[in-house]
Image (tube, rainbow over all chains, first blue to last red; front, side):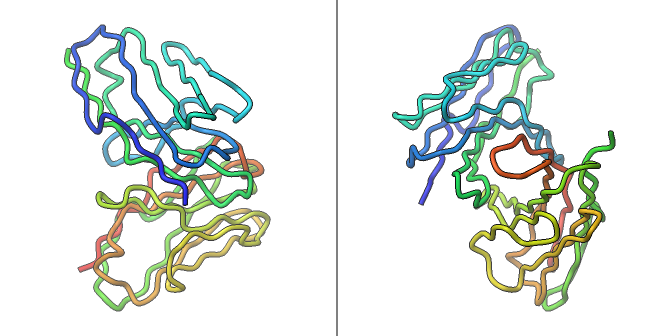
Length: 112
Length: 113
């Protein structure tokens, strides 16, 4: 059974810092990995999707990497801003399409 | 394009009742999936519908069911509600489903008293 772990569970940093969020998964037979952000009481917003054959994806100040063989992904946020405060979730899918398996998320607070 | 719309936004029910939640996907999207989010278990996959057929199902009891209509709108039903069913129920849509970026609605917050 696939398990996804995110470390740290919570993180508070001052504005302007670069930071790294970690995600690990137990079964390397994934189809892709997605990073989402969730604001309080809201749904999820997809940030980046990395196919299993890719090593990284970038969007603006966000960069996600994937090391499928070691079961790890990182989300790098450059020059953090208070608006980046949210819970960040990673999720993996399998080719058999039985839904996404999510981690519990990293609750991020960027202090002004 | 309008996003994924879920109704109602909040629901309060009592144990033993049943409830129906609705999800309208983004226009043109044929895949709708449902997730349950609780503080303890996090996000868990319920089921996915594509072109009116249930294509995948998570590990939930038969009290949880769903359907999809010809216009891709989907409903999920929970019968004989239990206290543990209190959760945020999220639906997500995509064009084809597997391996694609998912677009989530804001969810329905269900409280079972």
